[in-house]
Image 1 (spheres, rainbow, N blue to C red):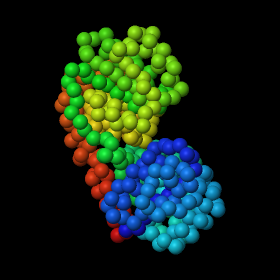
Image 2 (cartoon, rainbow, N blue to C red):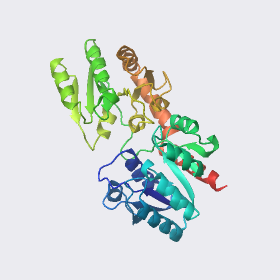
Image 3 (spheres, rainbow, N blue to C red):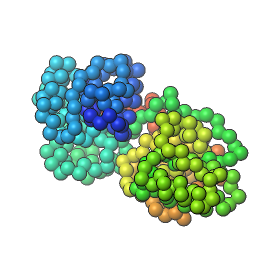
Image 4 (cartoon, rainbow, N blue to C red):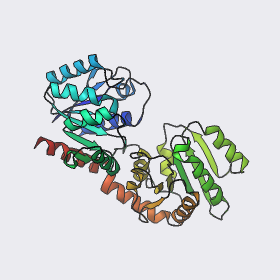
Length: 347
């Protein structure tokens, strides 16, 4: 099987699709697949993908005509079985190039909604297969007119060399938030819940990992409430796995809907119990009462109640999180889903 993987975002920084591209290519190479990468030169993907043949083309928007022609020529020369596009900005370019070169076109869909109606109307009907990163994304694709039989769910994959379980200490329950520090991520709801838990006899410590517009407000809140010994905001760190490994519970309190949080899978891989809001696809990482709890987004009282239950039951929930990860989100499970989808498409 030969794949041309497209992620031509020229941004030197990274987002979810760039992390996904890097990890998927790494795992596909391990499986012995022939993978070729088309990316923007000096982009995050270019700097972090090694040991594959690369072609350079930049796709800053949906009308990158010169790069589309170059992509079509690459595909005609290499004759891959599939062209996989991993970023919404590239969808129009990828479809045109793939159809011109007579190659099956597969879109990974990371976002809940496609806002551009012209893409929904004139691009989506001609794509050979969609790989949705959650059941929620699949449901939305169906609502946008994509037939169910053209959609398969393939969850995000994490680096198991970084994210894995280590035994957790039992003296203090450690609670973790990872993400952008803004209103949409619900970080202030998380802080309010921690303030209430700090009033109880629970021996806890909390970590807030990430950066954003609310960083100063969070620091001030912690000081004003006298929570410096209980809560630490540590900012961004490239070693976020160290916090997952020590944490007993990971909270994802998002207020705004999202397709599926990578944080949820990273936390499961490290054996964290989950307490998550009921928006988007996040709740697909929780089997209620088995490895965690789901609360109503924005409802701090419900979050506090679910957190108290998670604190009491963290050992059972942690064990079950590892079990759920192996069954549903592990590297082996994701690779099986991915190959099954492509093999089905070839038939």
